[in-house]
Amino acid sequence: VSVIGCALLHHPVKDREGKTVTSAVTNLDVHDIARSARTFGLARYYVVSPVEVQHVLVQRIIEHWTTGAGRRRIPARHEALTLVGSALSLQAAVADFTERCGQVPKLIATAARPPEGRELTTFGAFRQRLEGGEREAYLILFGTGHGLADWVLQAADVLLEPITGQGYNHLSVRAAAAIVFDRLLGQR
Ligand code: SAM
Image (cartoon, rainbow, N blue to C red):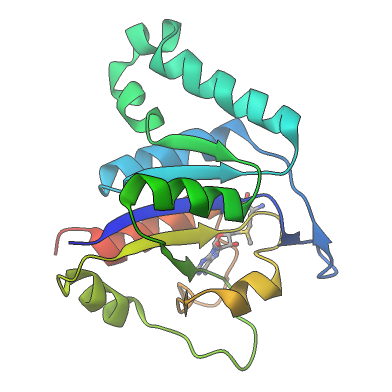
């Protein structure tokens, strides 16, 4: 059976002009995506940022909810936050996940507007691959800002098709993560 993690990248992500920038970690992204990851049985959720002081923030959030006052108040949140790890780079997250699950994860990128020229994998096809039974490790990548840098989208092993609604296409990363997890792992 596959082991699946996810990573929220704050670098390298695009700004409005498509330049590569670093975005700030938000408390909401840590909590919300941790709860979705827990709900759908992911093994790990990496908050990736090259900014050291942002790790202090992530570690403080984790500690508050896994050992501090938060744990006593809302124990269920403890379960979700124990999935969270912070990493200085995607490479560091991959290294940590490799160590934890004993094999190098394949990178699964997501994008609202995928770049031209890259073949997209449908949710259905990837779900079948997950249910295929061979033991694989996967890391699903989400962006912030205006999305993952193009080189990440090009370098990933799989680029998932975008979630398409009815035209408007500006989902928050929190909403997109929950939808992606449900399409790939939710009970049907
Ligand atoms: N500032 C925004 C926020 O607060 O969420 C971040 C936007 S960022 C582009 C949203 C990220 O969510 C993308 O990098 C991608 O990982 C995912 N995402 C958003 N819309 C999506 C869609 N329609 N299909 C697939 N993934 C999507």
